[in-house]
Structures are given as structure tokens and as C-alpha cells.
Image (tube, rainbow, N blue to C red; front, side, top):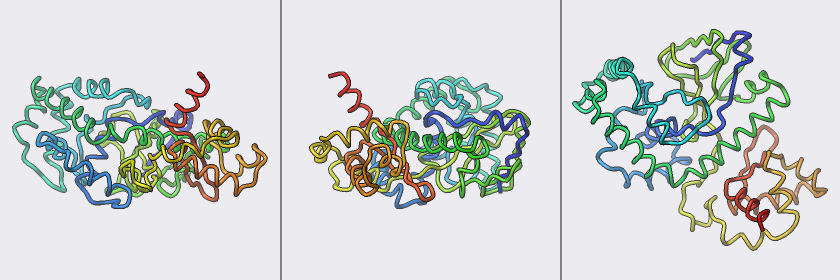
Amino acid sequence: MLRVHFTTDDIARVRVAAAPDPLWEIANSVQALVGDDGPLMFGDWRRLVRPRLRPEHGLLTTLLPPRGYSPDFLTPDLGGSGGGLEGAVDTVLRTPRAVLRRDLTRFAASPRRPRALSSGIRAVAEGEREALARLGGTLHDYHRHALAPFWPHIRAQVDADRAVRVRAVLKGGTDGLLASFRPVLRWRPPVLEADYPVDRELHLSGRGLLLQPSFFCFRRPVTLAAPDLPPVLVYPIQHVLGWARPQDSPDSPHRGTAELSALIGRTRAAILQDVVTGRTTGELALRLGISGAAASQHTAVLRRAGLLLSVRRSRHVLHTITPAGLALLEGAASV
């Protein structure tokens, strides 16, 4: 059980990250790749990505096991802005030698699976320039093969989750936000609880909390092990099944060319404009003066074309625009 303890100051300093964090997605995806959890969500992706792995990626699969401790320095604080991969990797490579040694000593002494460090990992622990350069190159190469082809969908899915959290804040403030994470997180003021592989008490002590949505986080949240680091709670988001299927698959959420002819019409264009900030099916029906069934039909066509995403929350379905949909809107506006 993980228990996160809030003070009054912490309540005022809760933030939701604006974008996916490339390093947390690398860490969580490596663990998803090595393990077999979530076959429906990650099965297609594993089958596509595993053949692309290279021997040098073994450094990451070693440092990021599916169970137990992973070194905190691989997921440094980026401020919740997401940012680019280049700057994120540079932050990793600038980790002080004392922190590298601390994290990798802890990694080697993990009570679940004590391990002897390879010469390459020992060189990283000593901050050797060539070893760190190899680590940086491996992070870039893994991202290029395993994540970059899917990044637009990852970003769109995180944006959809963020729209859910924004609505929760508008409706209920910070209490509403923290309550919106059920059942993954359980808000029992002033403590936020979650299922966790070990018992952990995290006292925020006025530092606030960054809530980081992660596409590859699965079932339960993740946090850093070192208590002195900026508090972050990485949580799983909803997924569209079949998201990693090839684009020519009839069920692929990326498929768009076969549906584009069906998008001509003022109603669907209006829906696409309206879901930029997130709308439920009922809200779309009310704002456009159409039935709920008609709104569902139109959003289904837009969703199959890869122009919007739909996330179920309780009794409602929230629709948000994808990068492809936004590009289509921007292109139409520039004509």
C-alpha cells in the first residue's frame, strides 16, 4: 500500500503534467516489453517492437526490470512539461556521480533480486564519459524504435486524460481532481492511497505533488524511491484497444484515408472544433441541437478516422481531438 500524506500547502501545489514524460514512457515501456502484463493493451505493440530490439538495448532491460527497484536517475524531474527527448536525456547524463553511485548501489542490493553489476553498469556508476555516452545513445535508439512511431497516439491519449482532469478541477477543485483517479488512486483526505508492491509512506511536507499520466504505466501508479526527490506520482491512463495495429488494419485507430470522404459536412466539422477542449456526447448533442444517437454516430466516424479520442468516465464518454484532427482543423483554417 502506498499512502501519500498531504498538508494544506500540498493541496495548493498539486499539478497534473502537461504532456507525457519521454523518460517515464521509456522506463514503463521497457518494463511492459519485458513482462507479459496487459496482453490486450500491449500485445500488438510487443509483437511489433521486440524484433526491433538490438543487443545494446539490453542495458535498459537490465536497469528497468518489470519488478522491483529501478534507478531513480533514469527518470529525473522535468517539471511536468514533457519537453523533448534531447533535453530529457541530457538531464540524465548530467546526474552527479554521487547520485549514480547511490542509485546503482541500491539497484545491485535490491532485496527482491540482488545482482552483480556488469562492467558497463559499473562504469555508469563511476560517471565515466564513454559509459554515459553509450547510455544516452541507447535511450535515444530505444525511443526511436519502440516509441517514436506511436508517439502521436501516446500524446493524444495523454491529452484526453488531461481533459478529464481539467473538468474534474473545474467541477470540484483539488478535491474533485484527486477523487477523479478512482479506482487507481483513492482520496481519503488528507491521504491519497494506492495499491503498491511494498508498504510506503510518502510525506509531501509542503513540496506539493506532480501527477504524471503515463501511457505505458499499467494498473497501479509508480513513484520514486528516494524520499528527498521532488514528489511525483505516475499513474496509468485509459487505452484504445488495437492502438498499435498496422494502419491498414480495419480496426486500427490510426486508419483515416478510407473514412475521410465521410467527414464532409458541417456537423462533423463543428464537432471536431468543439472537442478541442473536450466534450461529452450529451454536451455535443445539446450544443449542436442534435440527438444523442446522432452525436454518437458522428463521433464514431471521427474516431475511426483517427481525428478524435473517446474516454469513458463513469456514465459519460468524453471526446477530445487528436493531433491529426487538430492538423486538419489548422489546415482548413489556413485555406
